[in-house]
Length: 175
Ligand code: PNS
Image 1 (cartoon, helix red, strand yellow):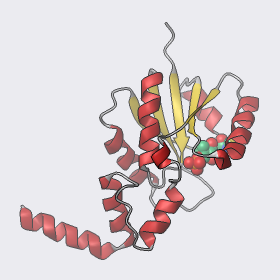
Image 2 (cartoon, protein in one colour; image 1 turned 60 degrees about the horizontal axis):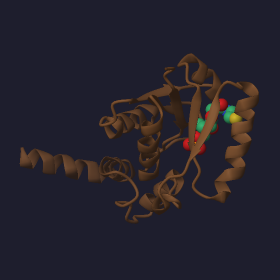
Image 3 (cartoon, protein in one colour; image 1 turned 45 degrees about the horizontal axis):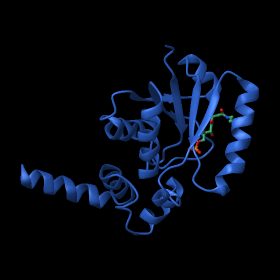
C-alpha cells in the first residue's frame, strides 16, 4: 500500500502543548509526519530557527514516524521536495477557519495533489497560541500548563538572561 507522508508546517515560535497534541494525532493517521519549521517568515521570531528545530526534535523524539525539518519559500514546493501528499493544520476555533481556508485553497491552486487535512487539538488547548504564550511569558505569567517544560525553561532563559545564569549555577552546584 502507498505510504502517506504529511508535512505539518508552521512557525512554532515557540512550540506549545497544542502543537504537540496535533503532532500526536497526526502521527497516528499518517505513515510519516514531518514537522516543518518555516525559516524566513515576515515575522521577527523570538527563537532562532536552530532553537525551534532543537526544541521540536527533543519534544518529538518519542514518535518513531515523526521528524523535524526546516524549509524556505513556498510550502507547496517543500511538500513536493519531500514527496508529501498531505499537509496537516490545526483549527482551534471558528476564528482560525477563514485564514486556514484561504491558505488551503491557495495551496490547492498551486499544487492540487497536496491535500490539506485539518485536525482539532484537545479543547483544553483551543485558546492557546504561540503569540499568547510569548506575551504571557514576557509579562511574567505562569505558562507551565501551556508549553512543555523544556520550552518553559528556554522561554525563561530567553526573556531573562539572569535566569539562565542562575540555573547553570544550580546545575553546577548539583554536579
Ligand atoms: O504557524 P503559522 O505561522 O500559522 O504557519 C503559517 C505557515 C508557515 C504554514 C504559512 O505562513 C506558510 O505556508 N508559509 C510559507 C510561504 C507560503 O507557502 N505561502 C503561501 C501560503 S498560501
